[in-house]
Amino acid sequence: MGYYDVMQVCRNGHMITAEATKHSELRKRFCPDCGTETLLACGKCDATIPGDYHWSNDLKAMPRRTKKPPAFCHNCGEPYPWTRARQQALADMVDGIEGLPEDDRRQLDEALTDIQTDGPRTEIGASRLRKLMKQGALTAGSGLYKLALDVATDAAKKLIVGS
Figure (tube, rainbow, N blue to C red):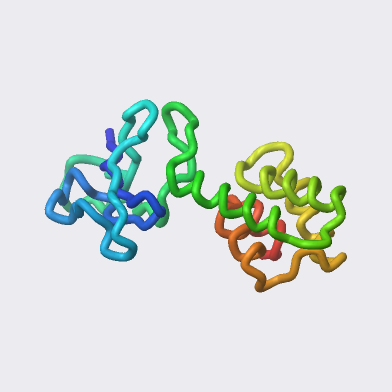
């Protein structure tokens, strides 16, 4: 039987280590990339952030490596601080787009919400983003586009940019 180690992440989403229990010497109080405080657990329910999965207690067994911090707590569903910060940045960017028709703004808001979780609306959100790009309301390479891909699930990214 295996177990998840604990991941340490800063409030901006930089992963410090995915093995904070096994290798406690890798822990940092503050992020070396941005200087913000680091976390080991959800701020709402105190569940630890899951890190690398270890198949057994055998030291020779290779763990399944975690590549990036999760967006939401596995225990209570609350967005982590880095997810909330990206969501707020997206909302601020959409608010700052001048001349965007209200209907396009609403569709963009809905699409950005839909691509942040895998579910029945993920494909709809990705399709709307592609449509808005074709209309010129959203351009590839723009800050909004980059941030949208940053918050999108892997499945949504594939639908938006192709695989």
